[in-house]
Image (cartoon, helix red, strand yellow):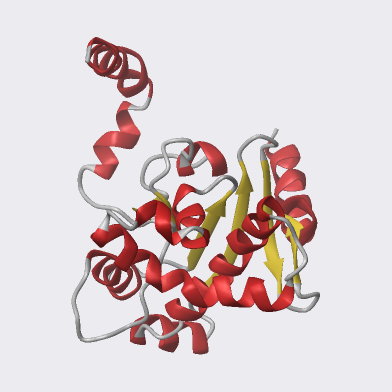
Length: 222
């Protein structure tokens, strides 16, 4: 544990010391702009990925970046979504899948998780995505199917997200925007689904206008 203990010491002496006012402000409350739902995979760091400061992201992580459809059964993901939308009033919800997802490899090969009953049951929320891939891309090899499953799973979980009452109402009135992303770990590439084109685009292409406006604003401030 020495690495992590030393990290805490460096955090206190370097990070906290450099952002002391920010942390003191956050001590009295939070007002994140987005709910970021992603996989528990250790290779993903949401704040690093979007270059967010503490307090800007409300994060929910689980194996497979899964959002169970809304039901009367209370769970951590459902409670987190409800709190983020109803109380924190986030303006954006992002579901982000990633390359080489072990959970989705388990969906493709159920025998690999047959001795993990809780994992197997959890991954059942991805089975429709697997069926979609088998239906749309029967001739792809295993690696290609996994890549497609990562995309289809994000879209499926986005559909599940829309069944949650607070999300449905805020999305219907334009108060919450929903985003489906995929992250290629090796390439550092993040793509976002474009509903009009029916495919995933690099974020700089999908959000081109927003990126340009931000860059121009930064130049003006300088």
